[in-house]
Amino acid sequence: MKRTKIKDALSMSGDNRKILIMGWVRNKRASKNLAFLAVNDGSCLHHLQVVIDFDHFDNHILDDVHTGASVAVEGKLSTSQGTGQNVELQAEDFRLLGKADPNEYPLQPKRHSLEFLREIAHLRFRTNLFGAVTRVRHAMIFAVHKFFNDKGFYNIHSPIITGSDAEGAGEMFQVTTLDLNKPPKTKDGVIDYSKDFFGKQTNLTVSGQLEAELAALAMSEVYTFGPTFRAENSNTVRHLAEFWMIEPEMAFYDINDNMDLAEEMLKYLVRYALDNCIDDLKFLEQRRTNEEKQKPQNERSAMSLLERLEFVVASDFKRITYTEAIDILIESKPNKKKKFNYPVESWGTDLQSEHERFLVEKHFKTPVIITDYPKDIKAFYMKMNEDNKTVRAMDVLFPQIGEIIGGSQREENYDMLTKRMKDMDVPEKEMWWFLETRKFGTVPHSGYGLGFERLLLFVTGLNNIRDVIPFPRTPKNAEF
Ligand code: 4AD
Ligand code: MG
Image 1 (cartoon, rainbow, N blue to C red):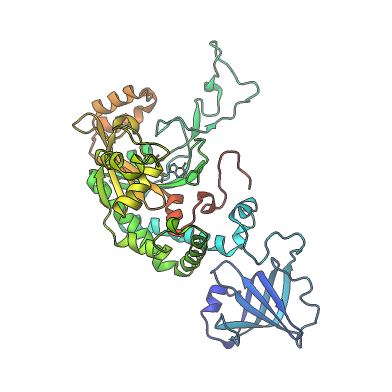
Image 2: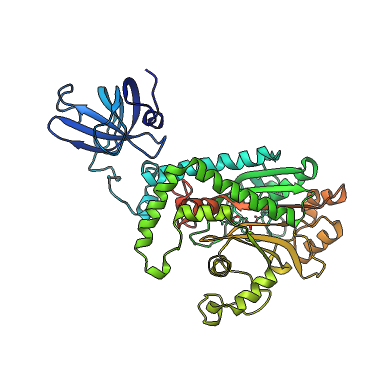
């Protein structure tokens, strides 16, 4: 018999049809005559209740069946007598596929801390929480591709190994096959990378943007969606050393078109989650509400998870310049009362996530897009404004998250771009290919990067970025 997924079984009527299911036991309850197994196969949040009638089975059939065991059950799908489910499976044929010793299996049917679950990331998929996160993550991946495909964008696979540092921040993981114990040296005593695998120094990419620009300047509208790597030693709940980024790049778009697309995309993705993941989102909301109850009244968030998602879809993102943002922050209560960890004193300082969240959560109470940042705190490729002080950058800030998107209009003028590269010590010679697009048929263009895990933090309402990626990579942590 062909296996039926539990998600499908739960949507069937209990008309005693025969089905076969397979999955993992989440819980076992037994009485003298009957036993109930809650079985989950990951296809949805809910378990299927399997009923074992000891009139039909040997009394010892479940002796080795505990939480975590895998089973295959064939039987009749009937209307459930109990509460909590519409249908249940009356077992007729039962097979234990794999045991899970209750003295060793770390997941028991109770609430485990997220910290503990991170230590057993190989098993945490088997919890309701990570099942939900995994399904939402999948739905969001699919929605990203659907959004851009429906708009006629082309997906570009940008390289993972590169020779350039797109963000110029020097936070790269090196890729080499040289023997680190005795690397070849040049006459001057420095490492001779011409002997390395690629004949030059290479690293894992921090962004697919530069290559996306090359493609956009022919295909008009493209996007990348790939892993990116940053060796920044910031052990925060919003940073990963390996994260996934969505980077659309569009010819003929100015900064305003860029903002419009970013806003439309974020609303589309959140709407998609609401329309397609409601069971999982309700579970995540309940979890969050319970967690909020532990907090003091004044720290609780005013909205539930679903309210917050609906709110973002319905809101108009507030658009302000960096200069306006700084004025607001300098005059703000927490700044005057010295409540910020990083006091805001003057124009030119970078915004910290506490400032971003103040603007979004306290001041405007809506997502905010900040544009026109000082040139010195942004990357070399951003288009210079007429004031020669600010660049056409845009950061999208979200409640709970802070920066979720960073992007800009790009400098398309060859002379301006080379000047910026000189000023910022970006190696012009190695980036000849990037510069040639400004020599041959250059056009105004724009793009941005959405941190995929930051989006998932927002959609799931979880607090720690390590809990929205299956196998987080952070400083001192690359287990699994
Ligand atoms: O602002 P960033 O550094 O921009 C870029 O990389 C541009 N090349 C994007 C572009 O214009 N095509 O990063 C973009 C986004 C951030 O807004 C944030 O959401 C996410 O990527 N991000 C991280 N997410 C998790 N862990 C990290 N260490 C991250 N660094 C950035
Ligand atoms: Mg940024």
